[in-house]
Amino acid sequence: MPNTRPFLLLAVLFVGYLLWQQWQTDYAAPPSVTSPAAITNTASGDAAKAVPNDVPAAPGEIPKPPADAATTTSPATTAPAQLVNITTDVFNISIDTRGGAIVRADLRAYPIAPKETDHPVRLLSDDATNFFIAQSGLVSAASPAPDHQAQFSAEKTEYTLADGSDTLEVPLTWTDASGIKVRKVYKFTRASYAVEQREEISNAGTTPWSGSEYRQLQRLPVVIVSSGFSFSNPEKFAFAGAAWYSPQDKFQKLGFDKYAATPLNKTITGGWVGMLQHYFFAAWVPKADEADQYSTAVVTNAGTPRYLIRSMSPAITVAPGETKSFDARLYIGPKLQSTLATVAPGLELTVDYGMFTVISQPLHWILSEIHRFVGNWGFAIILLVVLIKLAFYKLSEAQFKSSAKMKKVQPRLAALKERYGDDKQKLNAAMLELYQKEKINPVSGCLPMLVQFPVFLALYWVLLESVELRQAPFMLWIQNLSAPDPYFVLPILNAGVMLATQFLTPTVGMDPTQAKMMKAMPVMMAVMFAFFPAGLVLYWTVNGGLSLLQQYVITKRIESGAIAVA
Image (cartoon, rainbow, N blue to C red; front, top):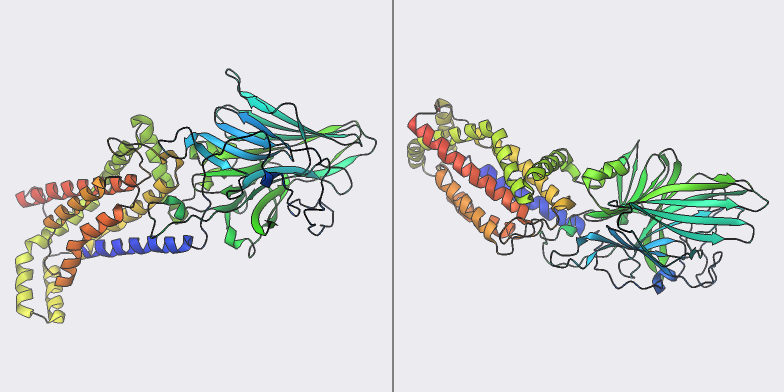
């Protein structure tokens, strides 16, 4: 049957596409997000250990070979490290006084599960199995400089953004006997996931100080263990790895498995470096006019590889009696498209829709605008379907006209089939002659499906990648549109819609094997949709229901003569 064969083909192609995605991710599984452990005032043993080969060489300095951890020391590392804990409206953060690294960052507005509101997502962690931290430090070829292994001192160990205050500053201090004093300050702003970082160098000595600041993200990817084809687990499909942006090269990604083959080593002005995972990421953003050296590296700790991406600032000179500073921003948070572009150019591209970006981005914008008015992502999806059906109404009308013509000539097609029996060559020639005589174009019924199927795939990526829809409730039993329907109601409804559509669609010309496959298609789709996000199944079910209603109305109008099919 000309009208249903394309749907079968597209469904098979869609399943094949998802299987290909599954195969791709089997070789580079993304890191997982874990629930936070209790925060204490001492650094964990793993974070406190110095990793000997993760400090970059200063500009102009010959890089030293990695030393053994037992013999490597940094300036002022003899004091025990402590954690400085910061609480804001969006963060629970811990800073290690060893190097002033951010070793823990909990996102308070994002629970790990809908019913676990007291357990926020921990994006940065010094845990041995989910290691992901943000570091910064100074390097100098000839002057004393505290890197991320140096011991800083803190004025206190607990900071809280007070009610009525919009900002909170957390200072750390490092001093050297030569008269160099470094003050590392983190500034937190209410309702913002962008943290300002300033490293001030005051020279009370007698000789100039010269050096650079580096900022880096260091992480250990974690393999996500799952069995079967886990379409319901979005982390199996989401990219996890390093990324950077430059005005020339735009947004670039580097998977952990590509670090050795395609390392990054570029001088870039007006960009950023980051580490991405599903829904969340962290990124260092240098000053827009600063020409930084961007690079990647793999370091080892106890035989385990860790992946680095860093930016190195140009060197500055601080004369005796002067104070100068390095400034940057660190984003730690969700991939919120509405705010990322205001933090840095290209940061919104971390919401990666892949090859469907050109369709997914407008869909996300339309969904967001609808959501502003209705306040519910499920109803926003339904209204999006209505808009799409209105946009494609003429195409659908042409499809159903073609279907009506096919239905009209069914008796003649049946007669041809009876006349020619198993002689498929003569049967096909006779059917083609009949189509030409009655001005029937079998392909015209395929166009609406061909146009709407990319929209279906693009919306799949919107639901997969958009953190705004993460754990978003709809109504009744559907309390998480990004997870499968817990009671399989929507997949069953979708199967019912498909069966009803088949009933209204002519089937003459289909061989028995194809007929059996088409009868089995609703069951196959129901099983497949049982593992898909409920939001996607809601879209497809409403779309199918409206198409069914539209087909019924147009068919009745054609039968009554209100619409001409000639």
